Length: 149
Image 1: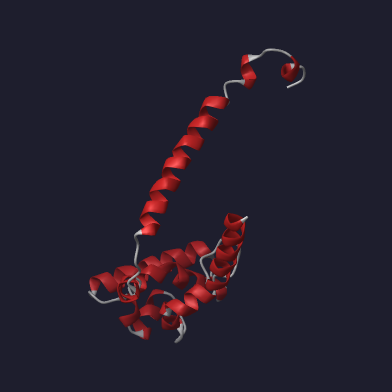
Image 2 (image 1 turned 45 degrees about the vertical axis):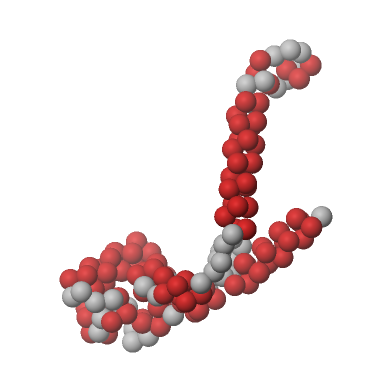
């Protein structure tokens, strides 16, 4: 960079087209988002139905094992075994017996099925950028303030 800003140099011009193109593309996306949200209505019952599948919380089951001292790689493999077991028996994950699940990995306790409570799962997502209620409220407030300014 030394000396480049003081003279005519193509190096400082080649970054401009992608920047301007990114702006144009983002502007189009914002217009589409505004149109989508402007006409949207939320059907809470359908949303609740859509997130009722316990398979959506399979990662939480791996996290459960990690909190019990199992390495994530091993926990991930164990959850894969539980998913396979559920598929073979044509049942939902949360409908497997304790014995069957403990047969996949000994670290599954009797409380493993508690993982499939969506409210509990969301409440555990407290970190920045996570979709837990606290973080969502915080981001909504931040954006509302930014957009009002």
